[in-house]
Amino acid sequence: MDTPDIALGAIWYLAFLFSTTCHEAAHALVAKWGGDLTAFEGGQVTLNPVPHIMRSPFGMVVMPILSYVLGGWMIGWASAPYDPSWQRRHPHRSAWMALAGPAANFTLMLLSAGAIRTGIALGRFIPPTSISGFSGLALGPNGEPTFATSALSIFLCSTCCWAHSICCRSRRWTATRRHAPDERKNWPCAIWISFIEAASRLLVC
Image (tube, rainbow, N blue to C red; front, side, top):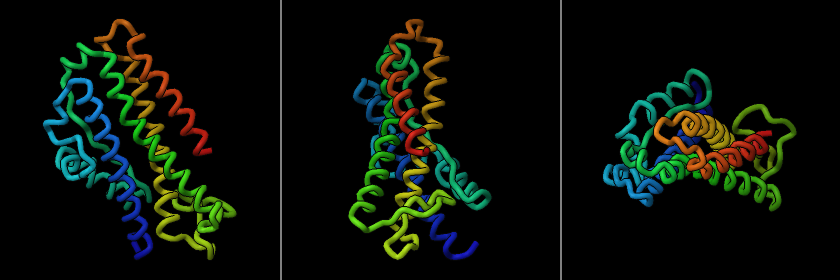
């Protein structure tokens, strides 16, 4: 692995670390607002990645690095604890908690797309003639990738893919819950997950 690959890997890891931290912190924050202090008391309501890494070291450190070395892109995971009894008592609130993580990824996705479009409009970036990888959605004024263009491209593509994957998992979660006989209580999660999933597909295409 040469120096450019290592530098690109560092950008990948920063994007992964920040988006995953935002995702889990959003879950924890909305759970706290809904009355479940489990994640809050565990230190998960924070954008500091350290508590999330300490809770899931394999998913936050080992697996992302390993997947990049072997495949050229990153995959990993983290988790925010919650009280199952609170989930059973408050299915509506737990649906919002499930939605919060994908919504955070979707917000980051829109910000990245907006930054790329703004950079192109201001002449700081130029669109590529062809896209051959995650890091090539925009180029610097000289036609070469820069740290900013690579970071924003990776951030957009990775958060879009992660948001879509998480939406699919959350959709299965709402469809298979055993403790919510009234499925209408999950309508916020179902509607917004459908919206996020559709938007993520449009951004990728």
